[in-house]
Image 1: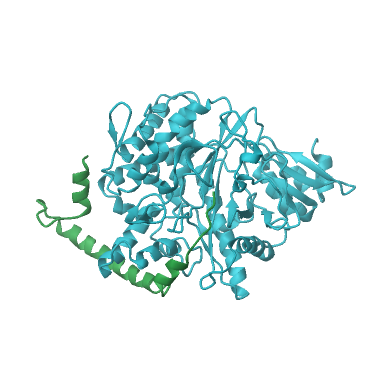
Image 2: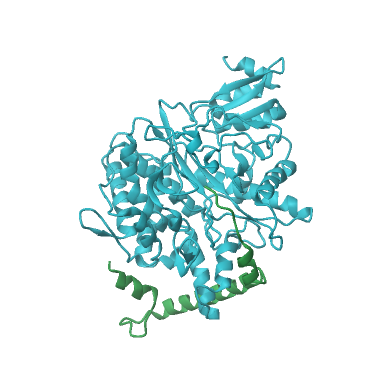
Length: 504
Length: 63
């Protein structure tokens, strides 16, 4: 088996200007995008005058086989209308940097491995940090947070995406994913101070997003958020591929947490694709997500329809055992490569430690790192869970600034394990992954700059010899790789040269 | 493993039947000292008015 597949992480960052309560978050999100584009090296990003190619975006199509009528859609679901007032850029690392609703968003390039997902996700933190530094130098200290909640009712997303064969029945994805996704925060949660959407209750919980999940399955992402999102927008050949768009995840700073989030999910998808996933059906997964999130001792259980009481660790263990069995059986498509072995070993080690003493995983998991800090302050200063200092620590944990962010401080002190070196992350700000179409997208940005008139996940629009825009489609996410295109890009001085070499 | 056992591990109690080995005690004490010094470092970077900052951290909902 392999955990390798096309995947990517989108993160909407929190944005704040302390002392300026009237600051417009949409305008400031746009400025964050502009700040990066202005401060980035030549050809590290597309100019803001280039566009996003919306030709293939279908946010209202539902994977269950119907489309929502546009007149019925909430205005926040209409993401495919090009608004010239809203900043958007495509970066030379293949990522998209833009404004989503009222947040600056970094959508990572498509990668093939969980470790690369970690690398290009952390590159997004550096992009945001550079944008904030740009404005700080002009006397506008905008602050950016890699988190998902404000503690007062608002939540914004970190979505993990996976390419899945269209042939896999969507009903199997739903039944196979529901139990896994409500248990998953144990190995990748961000941790949160506050219980309830507006922190009505005092306390700590493992998942930042659990309280904002209101449905098992659905199309929406901004309201009635579902555990399994049905948005059917493959950004690829729709007859062959499906892009599974998961919205329950937390933004993670810890490398191991990020690796486990996307790696375990990719492995579980492989189980479902091979019809080897554990048959667990829960009585109430939505309530179960909250129950499991609120017990860092993992004594809490959820009820299955056959009467079993399962803890988060029981559920995760069942999926991990199924993965190990598939590898041991050498089932078709289940020959373990190094990415897979790394994931399975890490997953097992973290599960084992969670059963013995979760507090030892502070270097691996954000929720534990945060929990250890919070309990340290709580005990030292005799604070209650609704003390503003603990709420502050929760928020400031994810500040992308090196001098303020507590996750950054933990990393600098060697208290947060790095799976990818700082140098590799810095390089990933400007260079794309080699083994997906993100390479072609990023290489075009780097090589042809403003002659790229627009781009999207599955297209690049280039100027031809007569300065006419020509759309190059990229319907195969595993096409467009460095090995296929490097020579032709290198031998093209202009986008027109490349267009003429496309069919070579 | 039952939840009660987990709780006990997380919160050491005085009547714990097996006292930890001296080396383990020393190592735990060293860890505590390290954490204390790290908390002091964090004190130095936390926003000065926690109440005001937390009150002002208001975000618009997203996806």
